[in-house]
Amino acid sequence: MKKIILAVFLLAFSFVSSFAQNDILSGIEAAGERSKTIKEPFTETAINSAGKASAPLKGELTYKAPDGFSMIYSEPAGDFFMISGKMMKESRAGVETVYDLEKNVMMRSLSHILLYSFSGRIKTLADELGADCEATAVKGGYHVILTAKVKSTRGLASVDLFYDSAFNITKMIMTEWSKRSTVYELAK
Image 1 (tube, rainbow, N blue to C red):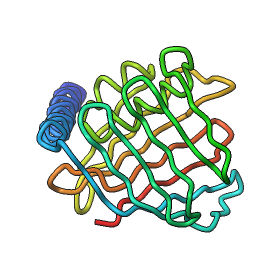
Image 2 (cartoon, rainbow, N blue to C red):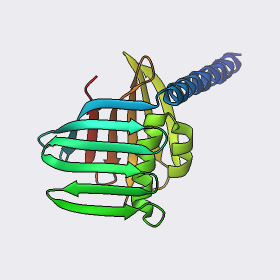
Image 3 (cartoon, helix red, strand yellow):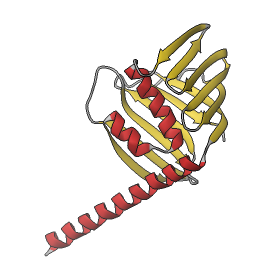
Image 4 (cartoon, helix red, strand yellow):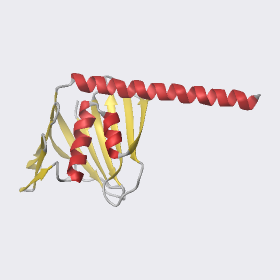
């Protein structure tokens, strides 16, 4: 009898957890559909595989639905990163690079991580990345973890997304298989 009660309890718990996760993802998607433009100061911090953080880079991030995104850095001044339609452009230390997102799979994946995270298309992103998706309520908001199902030599092992209680993105952590991470935080 105890085994039956435990089995029923576990089944009910998994149903409630699944329901809560779907509610969180639906809330994020609805907020993303309402947010046509986001313009916020941000910081970017690189963390090496030993856990040591670099000095934060700073600037202004802009998202314009459906496929416009930019990070204009004030520290270091002159650096930028932009997505516009099927093109990505960046400038680091005065070296400018342009990527055709139809031809460059890795950069297309990065552009989708950024665009879909801000537009609330988490389920689509998880499908494209071949990732498991877990969404939970945390103090002050929500935490979504996308974890790659298959290990690869390049690419990301996981993407952690943090949203406030109104389902607005506040933080993103992209972690490589080498355990190096890049952390983006919006200064709301």
